[in-house]
Length: 470
Image 1 (tube, helix red, strand yellow):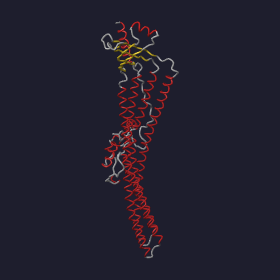
Image 2 (image 1 turned 90 degrees about the vertical axis):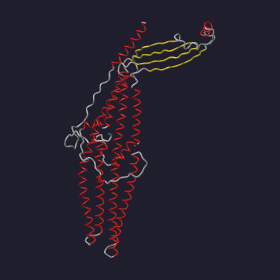
Image 3 (image 1 turned 120 degrees about the vertical axis):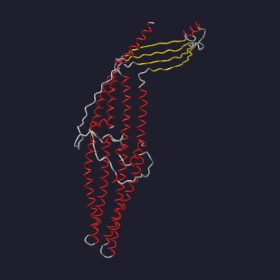
Image 4 (image 1 turned 120 degrees about the horizontal axis):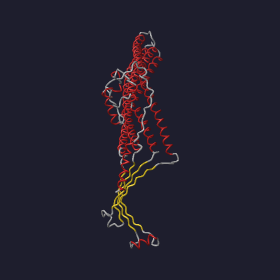
């Protein structure tokens, strides 16, 4: 009875010691955050990143492409599988505080030498030259979480799961932004192709007029050659644009998880619309919203828990083991109850003393790793603020560039009409007409490119602020 009381007391002490779990305190590192983003007039709490991607992108065609991408993109699917695998590990970690229980059945027959003491004893006492042993038992092993080692191991698993979850959100923001960028690039190429085809008509008309003037003796063959070369250059540009459109369609198809194919679109670049009120919000809110920054903070939290594990490994460990079942040296009465029953309980306290400095090294390395992750977290925040600032300044400057490019394109387009009238009247030569057409073509192509860049800068800002995963 006294032994039973001692065993119960040992278990009580072990279980009570679990309440003494010491979880290593986490102090959030100081972050180099400004009160507001550069190139913003005031610190506004509202942010375009709070919009769901369906609210941010109103184009139905683009919405359909993004929906396909979220469903079928292979990078995103791989990230979600990593989340699922990590979730299973997290479920397993919840059982780390419970004992290990196993069941084993064994049968053994041993025959000692007849000339040995064991052999002679067997013949004398049992009247046989071999020994049989049959055993069926449950085995239990449990370690009391005195210093919080198991709790910190569970914390590591939880942080790893959350990292994969934030990682999947980061992949989605990248996929959404990449699809939008590809779609706007496709609309730009469509616009540039339309511009090139329109310019081809002008070049054809110029060539026709030049040929007639040459036939009538009012022009030289050089003028015809120059006009023909201008037309051929435009035809070459058209084939290059058609090639780029096909390649961009293939890239978009792959992004949405489909085989390369044509991408249907019903609108032009001039019809696209994105939120006009470009509000960046507060830098502190961006840190908590951006998945990749949040993921890096979770890495830091994991390393903090790893320090706790390394510390706990240096302290005594209390382990309880027990086994019990039925045992017999005869098969016939193996399961005879209660005669064949046996059981044992063992409690042990183990204190590491000399491990060749391994435990101390593990602790110091864990602390250094935590310091590295503090620096990496700060670096991720700094990079995020830089990306937002780049997108803000790009958007503001591209807005002004678009206005100037539009004015230039209008001026040069009017210049074509003037040059053609003067050419027909003999007041201008063929070079002036060709130059006017070439300048107008480049100006309109440049305007389409700047419009696409401005759309891209808004998408970059949306992603940099942490939008796209909702």
